[in-house]
Length: 114
Figure 1 (cartoon, rainbow, N blue to C red):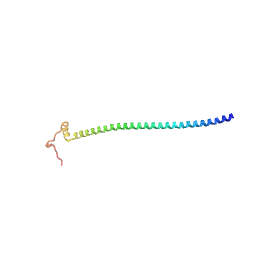
Figure 2 (cartoon, rainbow, N blue to C red; figure 1 turned 180 degrees about the vertical axis):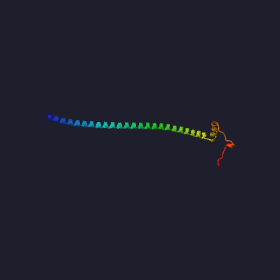
Figure 3 (spheres, helix red, strand yellow; figure 1 turned 30 degrees about the vertical axis):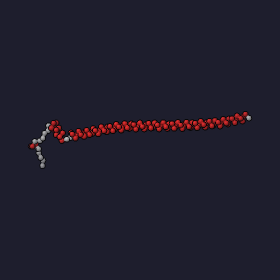
Figure 4 (cartoon, helix red, strand yellow; figure 1 turned 90 degrees about the horizontal axis):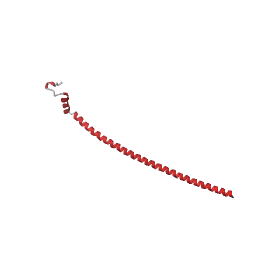
């Protein structure tokens, strides 16, 4: 009878052990799922921060590029004005007189070709 009682308790404890092991397995699965969910959320948060930093960096690049474009357009306008001034007939005539010592031709110096 003692053997039967002992066998019966052993069987119950085995069943109980299986229930406890199943509960531990469920808890482990629950913790694993929670850890995976937390890692996904952290990854999404880091991705959001990275995207925001890229947007700010591109904003600075765009601002710098716009300032450079404005400066270059102004310089281009100034250079066009200088070119127009230097190539004007009045300026060319003045430079020919001052630098090269040229003057208007006299009546006998002009030859008309047929």
